[in-house]
Length: 122
Image 1: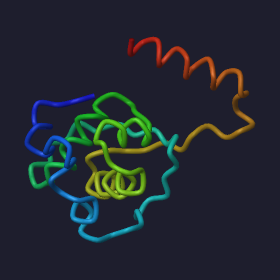
Image 2: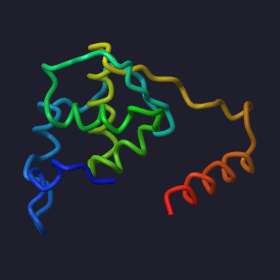
Image 3: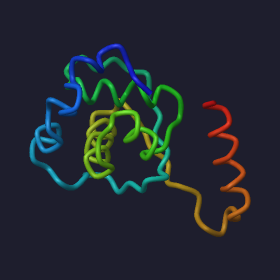
């Protein structure tokens, strides 16, 4: 998924102009425990003091999205995305829900949901 401002942050074959360690100010761990399947949704409040990557992440979770989906949309490693999402949760711009526990759903249900999501994107 690309957004209108993507061309500003990307430089052809070189990739992102801002390196991941700069996006997180050198932080390597999130303040909130997140899983790749943790669901994130924006709360709808206005947060003008956020960095561009935070705003882009917030746009990606306007509807519920997993941390993995947000990482793919931002073109950032999952660890960096977890720090960004944790920042959004800390300032009240987003909230998270833990993934369903293994006992709540079967592998078949997960695979069917994945297939449905992929088909929706085509």
